[in-house]
Image: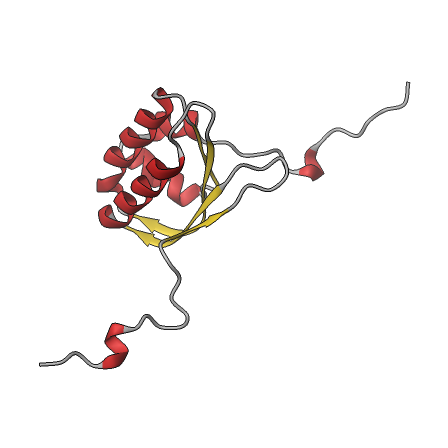
Length: 133
């Protein structure tokens, strides 16, 4: 039996699991993640990072801002792979982690490691104003 054509094509409103954004100015290449991430999706992310973070000079930002849910059972393996890349010298930073996603990392027993890998720039509105001499 032949599958219906619409089942073979992704819907126009579906987003990919991830999308690379090239480095621009002072910002490193960013891997933006989307939607709900399970073990399969996280393995795809690890492979994508392995392709970019090959040397100690490589810097990669992994943006979780558009992630709604992560399967906490797959997080220990994911974090272990990120730590392996960092031990080889690549700088991999996790950004945009919502409180909910951070809690999922905590539930998976990976909260302490994620706090080491997470980088959140300070919002511009919270900086101290410069004072005249």
